[in-house]
Image (cartoon, rainbow, N blue to C red):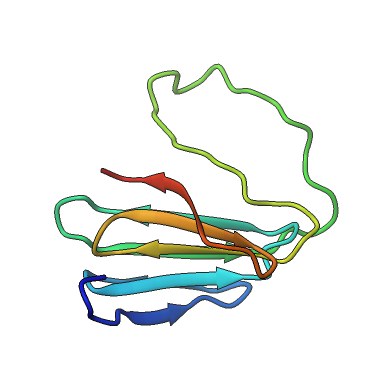
Length: 109
């Protein structure tokens, strides 16, 4: 982080928040929820949504529509406490499991 502390924006369950270069967006307690992170490579503007699912997750089904739509999907879910962070300066998405070390999930670059 080049000796500089980034501003932290924390997303609670049911919230959507945005930020810009030099900020970190983070959510935790994902569990059965869905966390979605988006990042614009040119402007370094990004956002995160922490969505709570009600009931059971639907069966895994594939769609034949939009075959050319490119979506990067990774899962951080599970029964342990998890958190997800997007660094709007670097475009890196990282996650932690419990009190474990932060690991890279995806890089937009």
